[in-house]
Image 1: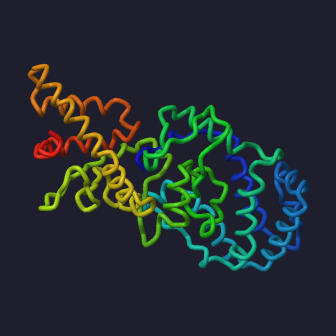
Image 2: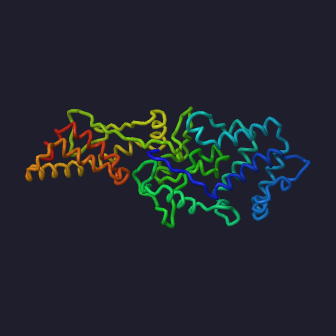
Length: 339
């Protein structure tokens, strides 16, 4: 993540508490000695009795869970606990428990229902919380987030909007259904980051570590941009191989971030997109500087521009424009093209 959200408390977390109760206290305690409704929390029982499809599915799973051994029940409880400790998973302190290691009832029956909780249940009147209200509240607590905190490129809906950005299931709900309605696992991102880039990628695949989207200690990533010297370099039309993107932060986490969201490729494209305009504007400033005999050196003029870009650095791709100008400062030969 380029930046991380400051987390909030919100009624929307209640549904995840209901899910934890349902999985760990009801289904994992299923027996002939009691019915499913006997074990249900009174608040969730109201929802259970309101939707016939929900009651039917919950009851079917309860009957299937009666056949589970004590060891299998313990495995399900452990998986629920571990796969919802998102911050520790991101740090590599814990390893996620894979779906195919659990009893069949989890994938065959629990998973479709828990995914349905997010798709159909979370915005129902009987369930505390609302996705749009949660989003707007989160943005009010993070008022400087005008662009996607993951890529920094795409404007996002404001807290005053009637719309919201996509909620990305950081751990994909297809592989980790126990975190389907856990809003510590649901990150508001732009549609390009969520649907086009990340899609169903698993951030912990092959032992990866990752940034936690609600880490209050996260240091914003600084991007460095290098222009690669070669005989065909043309500052009027930079190509993909002319630009190298790097980051100052944890190499393992930035590697995951890049892999999930195609960050380096997108930043390369953005830099090439604004480079011509930035250099032309800079050349005009240098020309005016010379005509007005202000006495500013090349380095001083660039330093002033770079300093200006530190103001509201996450707006208008300044976090990319600033390092681009820093590397341009070491390559005055570009002026031969724009002079």
